[in-house]
Image (cartoon, rainbow, N blue to C red; front, top):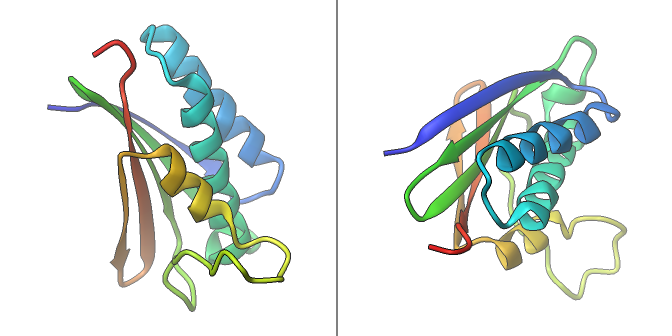
Length: 131
């Protein structure tokens, strides 16, 4: 069973830092380890929501959900959808950016994407340290 916290953020680039602070505060409050990885994951997922979905349009928003389980912490970002489904880019790509999900996958025990008609959710499960 997960204990969940969530917060909506305006779809503005500067709100990515606020999303990272939200996750950090929750992990510190819950006295959970893995703070650096969780903050990195939250930042990458929030940045992707703002950059690659309708969440970054005027009036857009994204939702950050943090779930605490017995052996994991789940970081999830729900955006307002867009033209593409999130996917990892090729490691050898010369394009700037596009490596956020590679970082997420490297930090997470598991991760995935849930596509809905008007939104998309990307989640990552991180191991709870000391469990």
